[in-house]
View 1: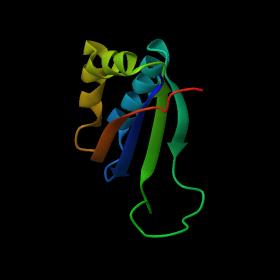
View 2: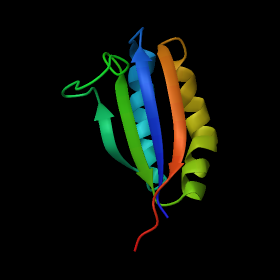
View 3: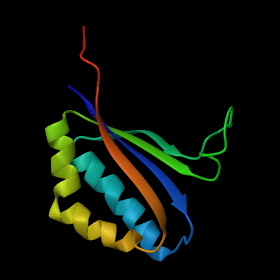
Length: 100
């Protein structure tokens, strides 16, 4: 069953470290079988203000096990250090719905 990582990011200090992190996390996502479904700002705000100015990232992985392998990998944990001090990050994992 697919698993999803959703990140809500408020970038307060964009810098070269964040660029390196973004590049490396994209590479690692692909290496672990993940694909991005959303990676950017909202095209249009319909209700509320919480998402204004926030980057939303949704990636799909083949399974929760594979997502956890990605997130807990030494390579990803090292890459995360490049984003330190660049903003506020809310990240959660979700199980997908079973296929019929």
